[in-house]
Amino acid sequence: MNVKTMKTKEASELLGVSQTTVKRWASHFPPSFPKDRLGHYVFSDSEISLLLYMKEQVDKGSSLEQIVLPEPDVAEPIRKPEIVSFSLDENEVFSRIREVERSLTQKADEVVSAQVLQHRSELDELRLMVAQLAATVENLQGNGVKSTLPLDEFRFPAMGEISAPAKKRGFFRTFF
View 1 (cartoon, rainbow, N blue to C red):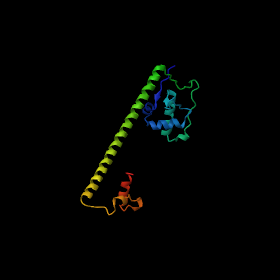
View 2: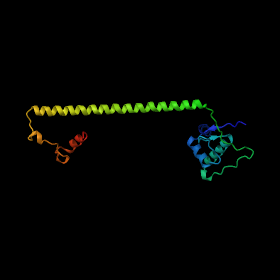
View 3: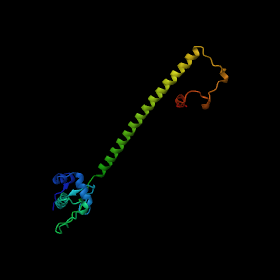
View 4: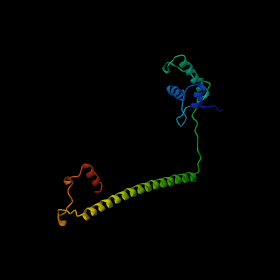
């Protein structure tokens, strides 16, 4: 016995209402409108007639809470959800798993490569900045700017001793 069924979209077009309305009506009466194994509503002829009855009642001004669905026809057998079985060869399953693993490995390699290139460009920028700072220091030393401290007494100042504005201190902290 082959029963013709409709999906939500087809039922909504037949009834002249939106798909959301059909879903709302069906969800209000779950025993009368079962879902398939994927969680979608599939409507048989008897369920379409129930939806038509609900539409008539709503058009007359009834709310969903006021609607009482007629008893189902006893002669009609209860429809059970269809069970679809897949027969896949064991080798095919393993080959698909290997293909998924290969594509995941490839994607991971691409991500790591992109990160390495990004880090390399950041390092190149830092090298350029250090080279510019070194050139500036050499230029200052070449112009006769001398330190007041003897070279053996020179030390790096502690973080609290730095008199540069906070913005510049944050910039130099990125190096250390």
